[in-house]
Image 1 (cartoon, one colour):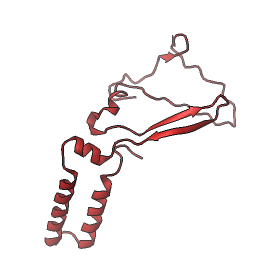
Image 2 (image 1 turned 90 degrees about the vertical axis):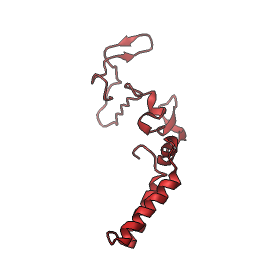
Image 3 (image 1 turned 135 degrees about the horizontal axis):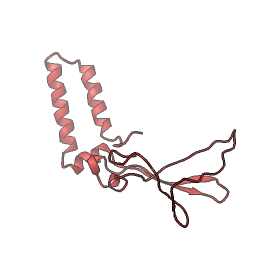
Image 4 (image 1 turned 180 degrees about the vertical axis):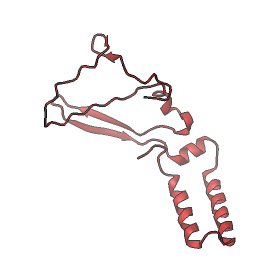
Length: 135
């Protein structure tokens, strides 16, 4: 569901038509039963086109064999925070340098210890390589 959906999914594509009910295989007690709902909502297309600076999500190609077994054939990593910062025309290294200067100023002013400043700088720099989506 998305923020501008009507809050329901009520059309299901079948091999020959569109139905108002979702037909599912019979559930058998003691067996795992998984149901995935993918590519729904108004943002399904724009999620991969830098909407709200999230960038491209991670993608996986999953092949399902005729016997029901599956395997992940390919994983394509999505955008990193540094990618989106650069996309927005900011200088990643310049931002890191400015952050370091601000930390140094706080250390000099006695508002932050050297150790805390080093930890914050390391965390800030490593965060640039994180994905823009939750892992």
